[in-house]
Image (cartoon, rainbow, N blue to C red; front, top):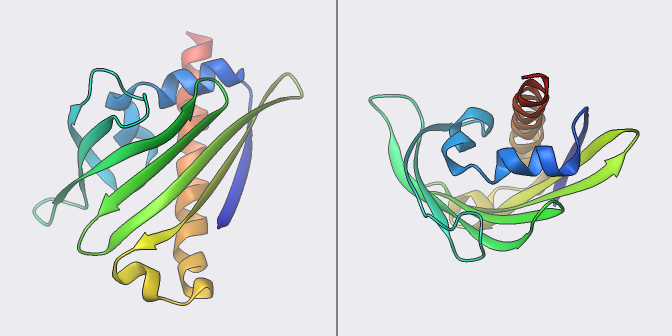
Length: 146
């Protein structure tokens, strides 16, 4: 798994509230351009978000589903983006220094993306996930300030 982490000046519960709002998914996940639907019980295990990936007019419609959820602590996702493939994403929240340390681990789990050597996958996944955590931080801290 390729891991990135970021300290957020918000509690784990405040950060998780962003993750738990499926309509915000495209606001913090790099590459997700729009949300088409969110299961009412998101982020319960088995629930999913239907989203589009890419830039218009080249959008791909696919979904992300929850493999495991411990509210306020952990969210494990299966992110689909076919024909590129699927990835498993682990988000872990830990109270730290008056805020929250967010750890994000991801790697290809199915499809053509899994065939790429890990160093090549790391070159694309790590910078994208660093930006995703930066966006998550901005939303969580911005909501806290409101």
